[in-house]
Length: 351
Image (cartoon, rainbow, N blue to C red; front, side, top):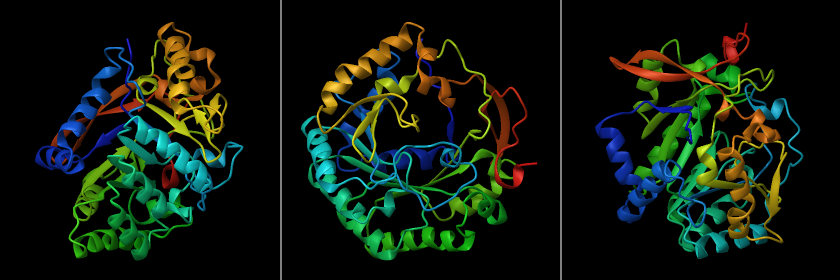
């Protein structure tokens, strides 16, 4: 059975959650809900889409932070570049040809360090990509950049914002809490000034950074942004989680990832490029999806996942246990990763 370990959890529920879905799909609702159906159910039915539903693209494999929870501090990524615009356009042109739904700027670096990031968003939207998404630490956001994003048609912007006050600063080194809080407010003010509905602004935190008082985090962030969520912590310094031998990863049916040099990876969690499927300079994304990614899918279905170096390292295939948490007066289930030793989290949580 194909499994989906839930490692990210939304904190907004009910009506707000429903409204965010309609906002994401504004202008192409039928296509949006069809994409959501494919995303949530195709892997369960073992149906392979003709083209990835999501392509993670690395405009930058560089980052200007030293976050103590980040894999970058404990691994050699073998790549520290900006993606050339010519290569980027080649990728987007093929994605547009096959009607890719979501192009997400994320992966191992900080996307907004690329000097042409606004131009990149603009090009993807003009080529017909329905949903363009940027994941960022938020420290590089300026009013000029935000205005550029809005005018280009950026759909979603996710800011990693781990905890409040001193907790945030103990993790997001060397960013300052008040400065980045102002950036969130500036983004929303700019969106209102331009009378725009997008990008939808989402913040996400590490769970350990807010677990002592998730209510406070939700109240602060919920008063500013559209969507609030949190991710489970991963321990990259000492990888001692327990792998699930029966895990079959759903992401192989959903996405591909492309690094700043054009190397194609089975998913965005192959941080050290242990298993490169090809390069877009000499192979098409479609060909890689139909052949090399299909080989990866079959390995998982045949119980051979742990033969893969990248998959053995990946927390998505870890054994998890359910824990019950309460905030906003409701009970919420949190999947906690099972570690062989004690792991308290990051920042001020470290002993």
